[in-house]
Image 1 (cartoon, helix red, strand yellow):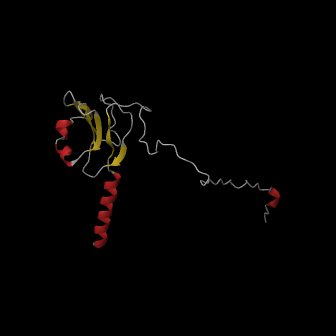
Image 2 (tube, rainbow, N blue to C red):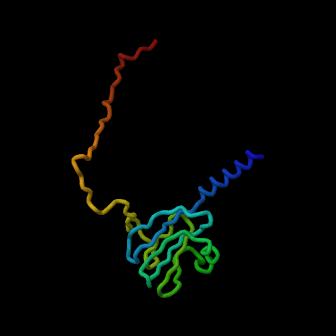
Length: 151
């Protein structure tokens, strides 16, 4: 019985981590082409969201929250962007990394966005103490047929 309970818990954990939705999360300026970071959503999230707020000049991308899930049919009757007011548009979708629309609610085309910068934009000062080692692959050895002995 103890083994079965552990096995059941393991199956639940593995299945929940396998089916977890991944969404873009973060806030960017309305006219930005920068991607936001990817996030693995919690078990309650079944939607990726994007809120376009023209009054604040921002786009906010996120996983759906518990409160979002309860009024999702009203806010988002189908996948895509839905006009809420002259200043707000609400977008939703239900597959991995799908919440990346432009400020006008249209989708980005391939190559139209930039990944979040993980590299500092400042130049790095290189000193003579910085060392790099280069290793060469060993020379390829050739086999001679005369070295093979068949008995």
